[in-house]
Image (tube, rainbow, N blue to C red; front, side, top):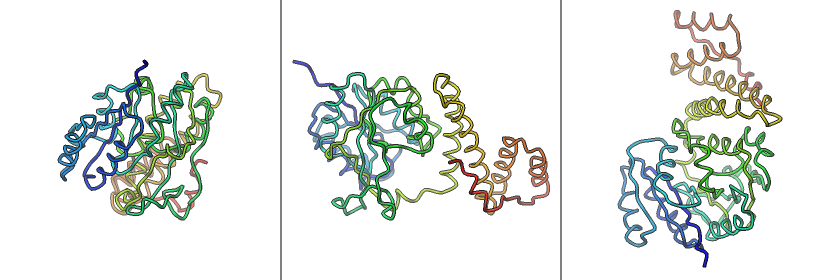
Length: 329
């Protein structure tokens, strides 16, 4: 008799005790039984520890790991380090996965032994209304956005470069994917999933799409999930775009590698430019810092001089509003 492979479910959390119970119910409800679930608590001050302790007493497959104030990436990596599974499933503490997800995706791995990533689609729901599902985070943009593709990840690398093609909990990953990539970049608290999955795709893994309705990732929409600071999101995107430069330079066999490097450089410049204006009214130091970095990347020495002069005079420099048009496609 062949033993079923073990799946490690990793859930980072911070002060989500009021959500995480439903998340753990969705793990307990999986038809596939050979799993462990590691909740990585990033220094919560609510009753997260007590909530998870209840589940640990109920089912020994649930485990609690406390870490004091790292990034979301650090939590994910810590969970992987503690895990023993052959496969890794990430789930956020306010979301759920459908009851057939792990079972269906393990079956697809058995049918496709050369695959490294099997992923499903996702649906969104408003907090308190779990039975009304939609395609998008934004109800006014309710149309499918995820790719439904099986093949080599290089085929989607250009699309992945522009945006995520799935949510963090969509894929089930072979453990070797975490080992090959080095895991999540711990300098990121947001957009860490884009950085990680882009680096995964750069390794040209075999990807398999799982269309089953009972494999869906279920993403809860609530006020806290929408309350991210615009400037901070751009700062995190800037860190991520800078971080993947090393990956891009290694894509020597990828036919569009130089094109992606150029697009990434343009996007980094665009983010600096946007942040100049974003900080102009409330943080002159950061505004000038981004102005100098933009001017340097643009080889605009006149602008560099103006930026340095603004540091001496205290005069604020901003870009015209129409610079939004310079955002890379």
